[in-house]
Image (cartoon, rainbow, N blue to C red; front, top):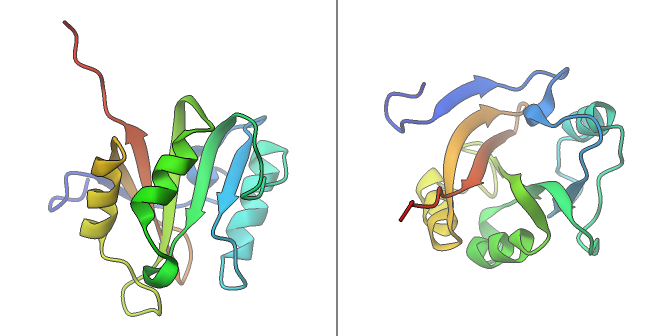
Length: 143
């Protein structure tokens, strides 16, 4: 547990990349030549499926969003992603680590997530240059 954020923090294992399971359909957003290709390959091996691109228009089990500071409005991207996400699906926002070009502060991720109706649950290191934040839907209150 990260004492400062209240979120779990861990290193990603190639055998269990981001907790994605066999059969999962994962949509990838923000792909560019700076992404972590080893992580992409590990996800495809773990799920048994190729990553779907931004134009995919069917239901997904998870979304992988590569996001850099200059990429625009993260809140809009999260809201768009949620439109195809299966109930209980997960969103991973992957951002450059501090000191790398395109670094995005975790507070900005948390703010965008909150506005989109999500909250951060886990932070991970996904390689030399990228960090990941797992976002989940906020729990519903019982009446």
